[in-house]
Image 1 (tube, rainbow, N blue to C red):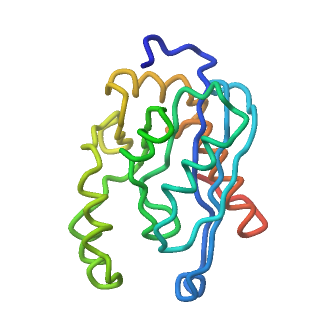
Image 2: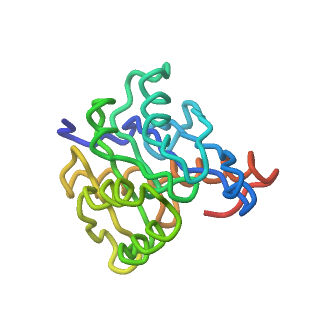
Length: 195
């Protein structure tokens, strides 16, 4: 449990790389990058794993990356959403239980669960299982109305908000997530894209 959020709190923020439609059809892979930081000030390291586009391995790959890393002083796992590589959905409760670390999801747009369910029904024979993982995710709360939403497992909304403020240098997105996005997109396309 996090009692006080220190300026140098150790967090890892994960985002995925871009992928093409052809990689979806061929069940290709995309990279998942985690940037380990002390607050918003110092990059301590980078983790990476390959995940299957539209697969079901994102949760396991995240667990593996965190549990088997040399970074044993992590306090929080940050995610930029719960879907990676298309509809490779992260089970937030499982991630929390198997790593022992609180999970903080940061997103800019409120997801449309009805549209997601319709897409899952249309494209995936296992749509019920995938949608159940989405449905079980904790409720969103607005940090900045209409601009930034959070989901947490193992953290109070107040502590989560403080962690976001502590790890954000500029803009709305915490630095570990912003850098993970840039690195992952550069690996996949040869050039980083803006968050």
